[in-house]
Image 1 (cartoon, rainbow, N blue to C red):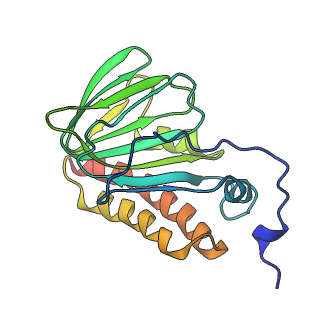
Image 2 (cartoon, rainbow, N blue to C red):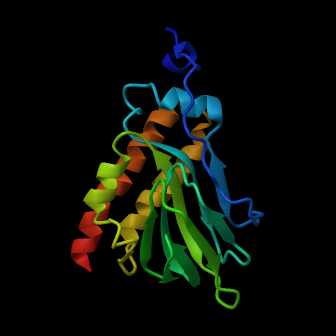
Amino acid sequence: MMDYFSMTSHQSTKPSAQTSQWPVPADSVRYVVPEPIVRQLAHHPLTRELYPLAFGHYRRAAGHHMHREHHRDNLLIYCTDGKAFLNVAGEPYTVTAGDLLLLPAGASHRYTADPDNPWTIHWVHYTGPLAAEFGDYMGFDDNTRVLHLGRQPRLLVDFNGLLSVRQTGFRTKGLIHASNRLRQLLSAVPMNVDET
């Protein structure tokens, strides 16, 4: 039986992840989905509505910073330790442990890890037609960029579940699983908010 991903056309272009070029230390992970696979995710019936472009975990991310004027995808970051300084569309924020932030497609932003107490984060870049709806569902809008969730073990389980997909390589089943783990992660956020 032919694999759906090997039959898919590669003609359309979808946004690739705009990850930072921060050098990843040994105890951190950055997983970027290759562009041909992103195009396949954009067409597969089980993934095309919402799919990850990149995800990872940075532990005590000293020197981590990014500035994006034209952000093409959505970036969800959960800070579990330390601190960072964020600016979204000219509005400053301080991000600390227990904060979840969404940088939606189109939002110019910059962030910098605190030099004395750099943040530890789980993060995922994602896109798809349902991305904006999930942003609304989670409780984010132009006035709410950061949710103060506190320590949420269930959210960490969901992020780590997404990270575990790396072990499957770039096979169809692993990619479908990754997209649906992402959907599970985003749909669980309001339950975590309700518990705070």
